[in-house]
Image 1 (cartoon, rainbow, N blue to C red):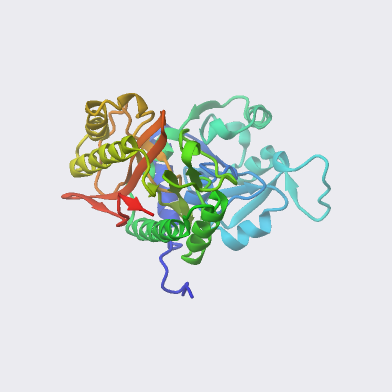
Image 2 (cartoon, one colour):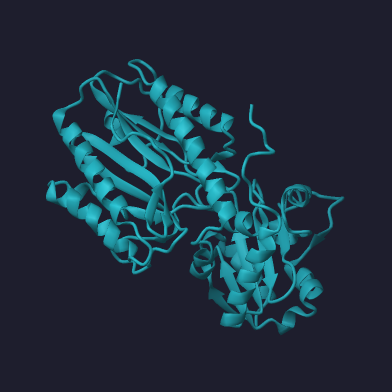
Length: 394
């Protein structure tokens, strides 16, 4: 049985430190107001609300409003306010009219428009001249139009990248939480491998993996659990089906549990019996690429230089056309959060970043595979965050 008293979490005092980081950014960019939007899209929607307010968004969207001084205000729908007060770290919670359902009645809720809220918390919304928006790409057109209509004199600036950059280097508490997320992922991989046998469906294997991750403390997943077998392994984003595992094929596993808002990501294939020899050769190549990249992880190095090492290993083996996406990315409140270190990114690795090396070989004639591992960048290189073997046989 888990003891919540000894499990890692983000302490309450860390959130005001994050607000001050954002307010420093606002000072630098001369922003009067910053709006951080979040919703419950599983992969990345909740990121800003979780990082700024420790609020796991569900069903209704939220916004966190920050001024240059003072505590933030959390705006939510009428079915989320009590949960936000109970669970979140922002004390001032308001129900925003723009987040209500026009077909629903909420007779006991205090519902305010954005202009009313801004007049209350800012003194006069008409004095706001510069607004930064994080999560702009997630907002629907009607909401954007409503916000702009409320602040017609304001200049709007997309600060998504700037706010994400503030999250890139992890605090000691964040590192502890992410370490536990990888323990959850490791438990899921072990359970999935143990469940794999001929005749078992992909969804049965996924059920065992997800149950093990939940028992280890996971609150959910950052991406849907991927268990794919045989020809289902071919696409990058396989979906788990009722297909039964057959002899002499592979099973692709990609697990990304979310623990206290933070993620881990482990990707493996499992060799069932004796799959075709070309699959084993491709796996050897992916493992060599993974090991070469991990050896090159050091603070001060451009991430794309590390990613290029893996690409070269794969290309030299004649498999370069199957390395279909950026093989290096950060991990945090999003399973693949910025910065992402593809060939076009000049971003430099920094100490206490958490990095996932994801070596992909997909859309091949025989299927696909992923060898994905997580690392903490240290002063002397990189520390692996789990010990899952690269070659797994059933």
